[in-house]
Image 1 (cartoon, rainbow, N blue to C red):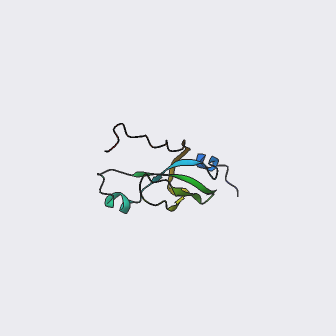
Image 2: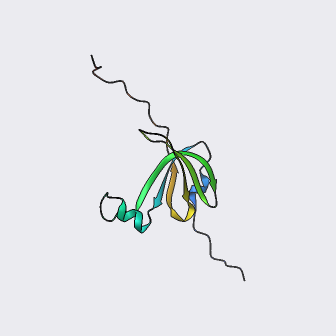
Image 3: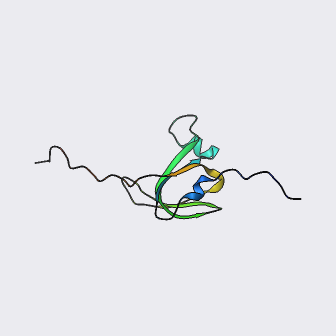
Length: 99
């Protein structure tokens, strides 16, 4: 017997490799408790460049402001939302250069 129930929408499937994107993922109960960022936090955002999109999820190379980029796989069942975002703006020149 086949099901006629439509699959839930997966807008993250529209992301393309090379695009900069933000993927909101659901935290596991253990991650939510151990996050230390306050009670009730259930999501976290991963910002990076899309490496791969599949039925299994989205693989990104993170785009940290500081530190080293990491490769992260966000499993499909943890994705709450995703969208393309513009490139990080260039650093501004300081108003008052150090002497």
